[in-house]
Image 1 (cartoon, helix red, strand yellow):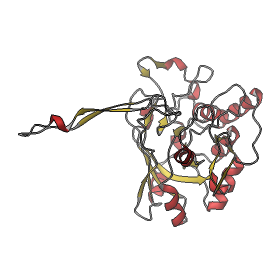
Image 2: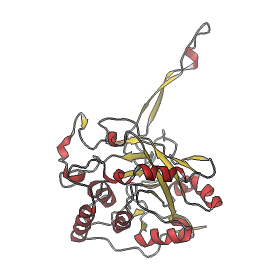
Image 3: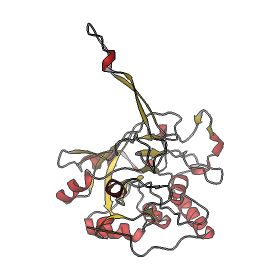
Image 4: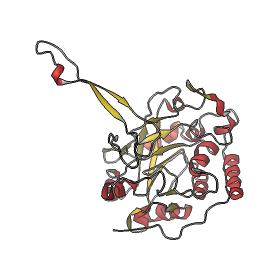
Amino acid sequence: MATSENPGRPPALDSAAFSALYQRLRQATPWGPDDRRGGLNYITPDRVLAAAAEVRLGRTVTLEAPIESQVAADNPEPARDEMTGTGDQADPAGLTFAMDRLTMNVHGNADSHIDALCHVMYQARLYNGVPADTVTPAGATQLSIEVARNGIVGRGVLLDIPSLHDVAWLEPGSHVTADDLTRAEAAQGVRVGEGDLLFVRVGHRERRNAMGPWDSAASRAGLHPTAMEFVAERKVAALGSDSNNDTSPSAAEGVDFPVHVLAINAMGLHLLDWLQFDDLVPICAEAGRWSFCCVIAPLRLVHGTGSPVNPIAIL
């Protein structure tokens, strides 16, 4: 495949247009003022059972990228996996344990993670109008990742946008539009439905592997803010990408992460950032099926704003 920018760049939104979009999506969110689960409400027991019926091949595939431990242009403060018990400490006459300690920034530009509903503060409010000061120095007292403590299990759908444009990846700065999502559905013979876990591939990992890391905080492919109307109409339960879902530079005047604001703050959607689909795409392509059962199990960081995550697709 060639590599090129996604053709037909949509226009940026001025502040009035973004505000109107934010209000439309917030008002379309059907849960009451006391809700703290957001899109997870779409995942009913019947939908979990239906997701289990997606398993046909008996294969499991990770959607997590390997945790980065080296300083890079997109990861100036990488995770540290420090060995605290090694073989040179082994007791030749008895038992010794190999041990290590992991430290990492949950929200970065390299490692796969899930954003909690407390992650985005917009106009001093969290999702559903919860005051921003409920996120304290001791952690989030509402809307933490603990909301997803029982896991997120549902029907996953992968939409492969570079393949739609016959390229290996979308170049940084390219936008995925609602039209792209609709056309990808048609090309792949799949339809995103209520309660689904939607995964959007832009090819970030393939580009990074081929060309090396770059400052993805400044320039990356992602969803155009208006694509969130597609997500709302389809009543998606959670959204993930191999980018961080947002395009950079931003397509909304005065808002650096408009998709994060719309998805998390307005709609109550957990976002999964910086996933990898390298292992999943060839299996889906070979099987001719782009839907699967998916299990997402965040760590129980009771007051956490997110968590490292290893989503598993079961086909």
